[in-house]
Length: 181
Image (cartoon, rainbow, N blue to C red; front, top):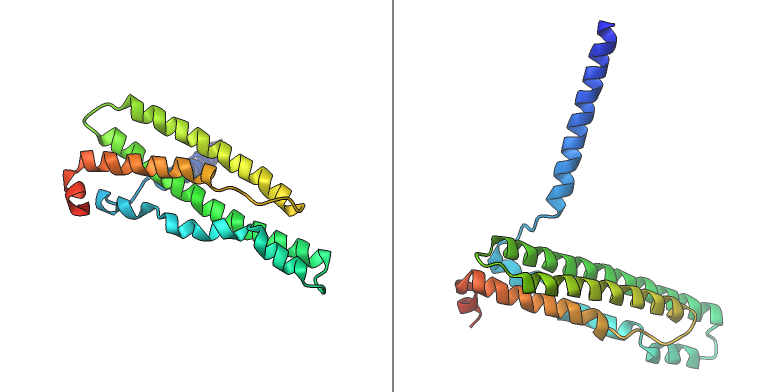
């Protein structure tokens, strides 16, 4: 009986330690490790300029204009473009989440309560999610030969949240505003 109790205790301790390590690792992902003076570099629109041209029809038309290009090659071309575009979308989503985390961190550390900013952040997160889903549907259609994707709806929530982050960071630390001027 003592051996069973000892074995059960050791097993429970191992499980507790495992869950503790897992909890620490999961919560560490949600932390933003950048100091406020580096938040300006969180997101750059120029990083996503290639997305605008990636699904442009001019490249597909050029490819179709050659006589020796088969429909299978055209389909592979579109599939590769969609895969690249999804890679950019993944980076864009990570950037959006990073900016939202920085904004939430500033709101928590702020001396003033900002329910308007919290509402705006929630609205922009919802808008961004809807835009990502719409782009996914358009990517599926693009794979079947339909037209490309408009990025304006996807970039708008991101730039709005980034602008709010910059404004709140300037309020939280006026030295940041002075360094930008």
